[in-house]
Length: 503
Image (cartoon, rainbow, N blue to C red):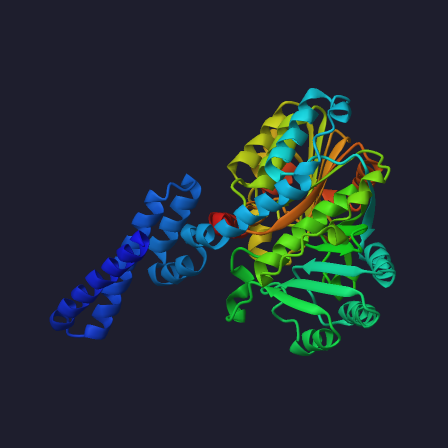
């Protein structure tokens, strides 16, 4: 109520000033607009200042408003307001926490297994337990899937075997050859009586045809758009998107990782060529966490509550695992930037090596400092990024961080076999994270993400060998040569980096 009164008072003042200015200025239209935007920019600047955001974000917003008052005004209204985030997701945060405590709170930390870890590793998974509300599972099986061909061979086969239900949650869904393959399978399973729920992001999938959705809906598939939008030409930058990629089949098998649904993920796009990505097959106890994440997202968008034993499969605890697996959800509905905190903990806990792959590398100050300190301490720090852009501003912003990282001893590689889209961190060849979260501020602060954290599983070994193979198809950036790149490249990179807190 107080916020509403403040807004009303603000606009009342504007109207009074407009009325006065109308009689004083010859061109009252120009004068009116000038007064409106001037007062609005000043007002927004004051709000940003007193919100006590990170200084970098505060200065960036103030600079944008000062340099481009009209554009900055609309940009802030659409993307910059923190109160919209807190109001929009506060209820979801409370309901999610209650659900996780009710369902996953039944499982306690396996102290016997944790004691086998080194002390710093125990701290990481205890932190993950506290932030993610679910303990590490030692009764889960995982398998790394190293590209689109392998991933969708497993997914399509698993979908065909479904007997009770199929739950899908994706950021991008395309009406192309792969999209049609999945559509046809889902329609066939729905006709067999399998319950199919499909949650797709309203921005990532805004190009998805109505015919695609209608055909699935008419067959009995429940298709739901997550936070749909009305202005598609602006949607590529709208905040608080559901970036998760989850499939749960019969509560027994799960998939999570970096691949969306589209032909480019199978390497069929002429610009990108081979699409290097990483997905994870999961079976066992950890699938229940993926299921719970999906069910809570479904509840948020539809209001339907389906937290029952039919979907939460308690018997999965009998699955034999070969290490630890922990599924962690992160998003604007959580109190802490969960994945960022866990990434930071992984980096600072490293004793020997930190290997990172990310298509969008825009670290904040905390992550950047942790990586530089690790490299300066003699730890083997490697970062693998694409050598071609799919988002040019992000690509150039990423490159602006290379000089200081290279100077600190970080080894930076550019993947040249195709487009590198994997999102992984491997620490000391023992702990790894694989999922949907990029190493950027959008994933840390704005998007709904989900990552699997692995401890001494066979999948960690696979990730290490895959990373080594990827480096064989990459060029290591030479520090001295990179420092001598053209001035125009530096200018683009610095300009892009200036906007990085807003990307």
